[in-house]
Length: 234
Image 1 (spheres, rainbow, N blue to C red):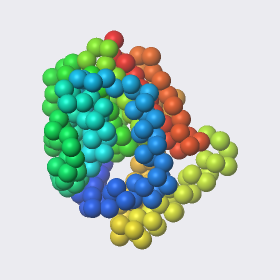
Image 2 (spheres, rainbow, N blue to C red; image 1 turned 45 degrees about the vertical axis):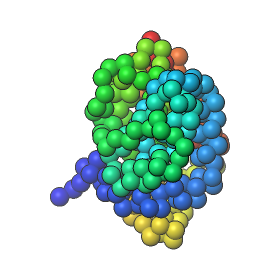
Image 3 (cartoon, one colour; image 1 turned 180 degrees about the vertical axis):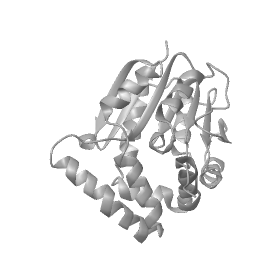
Image 4 (spheres, rainbow, N blue to C red; image 1 turned 30 degrees about the vertical axis):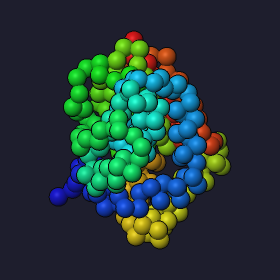
């Protein structure tokens, strides 16, 4: 019987969790850290606020948000992979932050009241959900009026030649790296499929607006291989 996207993605992350951080660095040539740092700068996170990191994985962005909101703030990370959360919990325990909560949950149906957070982020996770728009609507629902919804994700380069190189890299090189570094060829083949099929920057910006977000900002990184989308709830 054919698996649903949700079942397939869950199986992928339950298997690759031990090597996930290492592979992120290999695949992005360490650029994902710089992309997140610039995104955080653009978010201008205030002390004492409350942040939710959806599809938090091993909690790197959750930890960054915990530092940004400070001791009087709160950072919550949510993911549907228990194994990924185990790695995140180890990081939280060894961190200096006491303002973090990690939860097992589904991005398609966030277990929070309306208007609960000042910032809601999703980093390299939106491409793996069954319904992009549904998740954006849920993120918009739980953010407070005036709050920010932010997505940092792989994107679709448009420059001729560069786009072809990007597609070749994701189709052939990334799965090979997955096999060599993480012993997970099939899982990294899936991740290249999800990146290949993900909407381009303009299409995703339109989805932000359809989800009810306004004043949408887009920032392209490294020739368009990744992009930040930021929208406000009015």
